[in-house]
Length: 341
Image (cartoon, rainbow, N blue to C red; front, side, top):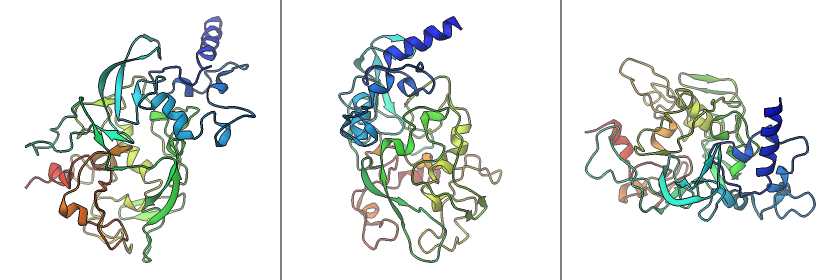
């Protein structure tokens, strides 16, 4: 008990400042890491002089998150703004004092402003080949909008009435729990604005698209040298098994089982759909795809050629332009990675 009390007291001290560096998923977000008389709350909140909603110390939730996870942030080695992670200067348990300025690698989910995905693949189109170079990133061509309204494509029931989705106002906390939980990457079991009704699709019948469990890991590897391998080596099979259901909490009608490419869903827009459920349906289906096999979570720097730019957004009549739909590879290179011709 004495050791536990000392640990809790120590945690309360370093939680005082919002920009105290961390090197783990939970860090200052850790539930239960504060003492009953903690002042860790003041790292992010103000009781009477807040400048942002929810009594946030920052002008917006995104700006507050970027004090640690931004380009110039010093509170975490993970820079989600630029899609990279830095080496820590020193490490004591989960606490780091500064970033060294040396890149440790490229984040699996890309970045919100820039990303360093090697989307071109060079001359290689063989499955499971491709790396992410570290030196310089490119501006993203698509991203999940944070602190801004965007469309949750496919949100809602399968319907014969044309409906591309619904408008949502995303923040970092729409997907992540800022106070910590036991989920992988502190993902919320039910994201904000999730669709929680009954969903029936081909080979899929999920009573409620909420409370998706993705178990956390005890070690953390945020970067990758092979962006075509979406699995986290520390997360086992739980992440890959459940991530499509988690994404489909909002993008409901994108969740499809084996045979959905040949069987009509009856939806006016999302009619015939590529399999995304990650469930092995036959002996030939050795690596059933999930959402993150083709797409990244935060933002991609993939480019779109003439034909890809002409593909409209769901329910639209004109082309998408340069929007890359969070794809991991330029144009429709994700298709060729699994279906080389």
